[in-house]
Length: 81
Image 1 (tube, rainbow, N blue to C red):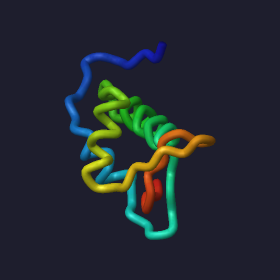
Image 2 (cartoon, one colour):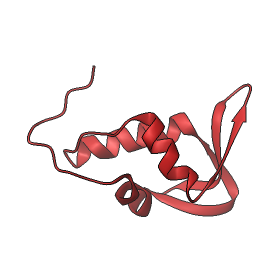
Image 3 (cartoon, rainbow, N blue to C red):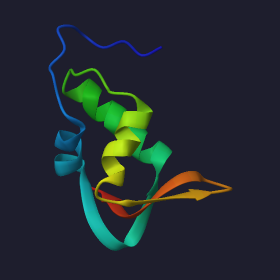
């Protein structure tokens, strides 16, 4: 279990998207890779991460999500900064 320092700073997932994700026509990232980066970002900014499902729902608003048998969830046209 991961431990976060208190008090937590409130955030929206869109904050992470604006700061750490870039649209790229030839790139793709696994949902796991994006979610792990999001949790790391939350630790850096002393904020409690939202659920993985909520995170994926937010990304689906702007990015294409596909399911791959080998890699699981993949978001297309996404690159981490």
